[in-house]
Every structure is written in structure tokens, then in C-alpha cells.
Amino acid sequence: VVKDDGLAAGKGVVVTSDRAEALAHAEACFAAGGTVVIEDFLDGPEVSLFVICDGEDAVALTPAQDFKRIHDGDAGPNTGGMGAYTPLPWLPEGFTDEVMDRVARPVLAEMARRGTPFTGVLFCGLAVTAKGVEVIEFNVRFGDPETQAVLARLETPLGGLLADAAAGRLGADRRLEWSDDVAVDVVVASAGYPASSSTGDVISGLADAAAL
Image (tube, rainbow, N blue to C red):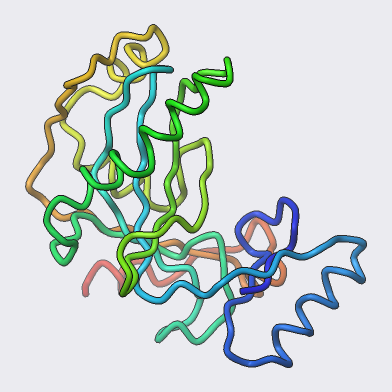
């Protein structure tokens, strides 16, 4: 895994078994004046878990899975995400509790210990590997496109939840209500994405898509 060591809108990473492709991406980063990070490849599917934090307590939203590569069969380059769905019935039992206990709450505790308690959305990017759950990355925001699918199923009022997080009122045993529905979203991208993008393109074929 070769990553541009900087902000790249989710498109600065190459995951490959081809040494030449890995070297080419690194050289492109160097040519642009940047540096690179080399990481282990984590086998297994990726899962996103958003955790709402109030500086001390936290509550997890439902896990979602997005798809990073642009073409069918994961044949294309990485993007910021081409679509997502939730729930994930294939996850092992107790997955969310494990992530909260092993990942999210220790991060919150360490932030508080350093005198910088975290309030907001902790985005845990995870891989369900043969060795168990491992962390790919953290962000401090909602993630696109997973958020659209996750919030479509949230029945607890979001505004009140965020207000309680901001005011430190989440509590240690906060419970959320979820719809039993399945939510799926698909991203429509401009021609050339992710290498380039444009605005103002006309979207056609909506009637054909709606008929599927």
C-alpha cells in the first residue's frame, strides 16, 4: 500500500501486488513535491464505523461498507468512494462492541489524558482481516458516501444526538433506534474521475435506472 503523505481527497493511495505500479505511484508523489507512506496490505473487507463523541462518552452508529475502486469488479483506481450500503449481516457478532472497546474508547481516553478531549465524529476505517479487526485510518468527520446510507436508517433524531454530544450529555449508555430497512447509495461521478473531474455535466438515463 503506497500513500501520498498528505491530503489527497481519498484518491492518493494505490493498493497493488504490482511492484512497478507501486513504484510509479511513489515517483508521481515525489515528482509533485510530496512524500509517501508505505503500509502493510490488510486482507479482508473494509468497514466504516462512525462514533459520536462528547469528550468523555461515545455512541456508535451502524457499520457501513463503501466501495473505493471505480469500476466493476474492483478493476479501477481508488476514489473517495463510489457507493455504500448498510446493515452488514456478514459481520461477526459483537463487532461494534469490539471496535468501541478496543479502538474508539481508548482513543477518546488518550485524547482526554493529553488535555485535548475530542468532541465530534470519530470515523474509524477498519479492515476485517484473517487476524481480526484492524484499523486502516481515522478521520474526524462523517464519511462520504457511507453517511448517506447510515443516516437513512437512523430513527433517533440526529439534531438532538449532535446537540447532546456538543454539550457533553451523551451518557455512558446511550442507545439509538434504527430502521430494519436496508439502505444503499450509488455515487454518480463526472467523466474522467478520479484522475480528473468536471462540473456542469448533464446526467441522463435516470428513467432507465429507475426502471431496474
